[in-house]
View (cartoon, rainbow, N blue to C red):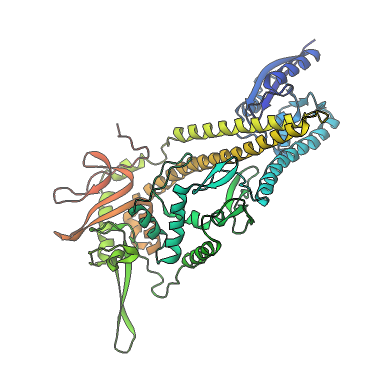
Length: 561
């Protein structure tokens, strides 16, 4: 009698190897079932440390579906230990099963007693896959509820300690060598006319360094760091919950992203405050005031195209757009002048610059566009640029970081599940039951904190990988635009020109005064360019050299062979 050919599929979502659920235990049970039911195993597929929330990332599962579609071994069934090993997402489970059945292959869940080739089995697949998904969602809810309860109690509810504090036995303790910088940030922002950049400059100019924390390496304060500090209620003794929320991406089935929330719960913390409540609230008031942009009252279509990109030849700060309007005796305006000037010439934000020259925006804009025109009009430019569009981008390093981050998260989740199992299997009649339960619960709380940190790290590395891809797309768009620069530039709006230059350039260095009718000293590019026989991110203009050289941009920064 001809034996029925089957595939077996096994999966564990963590490194945990619990009897009955480990890969080996699943395989042993499925092998015995096949032998006892006159079946021959034609292929084995296994995913270790893969979540069942969706099929994405489960390489062997997808390989199995592909082999089924190709009718590689002519199998009639796929054997799984339990339906939850096949998947915890109801929609994906049913979609995958339907895919298999389209090729005449059914599913048998050994422990659940389900055979999808039978009517009762089909119904049970629907029910149990929905239950599995609910179970997964409940685990997430329980984790989040545990964090929220800690916040209600005033405890730190997960993640690295915020700058200015350290964690000691799960409690936030002020780290004095960091806290002083926090006090200075709030004081300077509230009690002076310094903005975010001004506060950052003050800190860095006065030798107030930022300690490198966790996986970070920066030792200077940045604008984003200052804003994050000013916004965090932890500094006036509060614990916030729900400042960020994991939200499903609209239009997708299983894709999520972290979204900052405008409203969230705040509770009294057990920790000591670094600044008083009124100072924190004053900082928020100024934050809101500076966040609202001034309404533009004239020349609504005009934008300072190169504002910030053109650098002061004396102090190096960005030149910003100025507007001056000529007025008649009767008070009416008849002409508007636009210019670039150094903001520090007015001793702004505590910094003074002696460079008072104001450059005509039209003159500087034309000089820069002329340089770009000469680049794109080179006979070989189009030929060389087209070879760089749609080339592959190296993401191996970012993928390695992401894999390591996910590995750490997987290990932590495995430890968490093992502790939960230990709690569930405690003997309630044991005289030391309460002590053992409390000890395990403390360990579980600590693991939840570490899981939160690991989840943040995974999210950050995923963003990093995504940004590499986005940079590649941006670069291709810039290349395509450059190929058409000469024909479309003049019809673009000022805003479109500004967006293009900000995507392409890092800075524009100018002379203090014109040199042989030349304003531009050098231009920095965001992508390496081939100029004067070598790859560089900066084109330097002088009397001997011109920019009528083939420009070749690439992403990896390696020399072209």
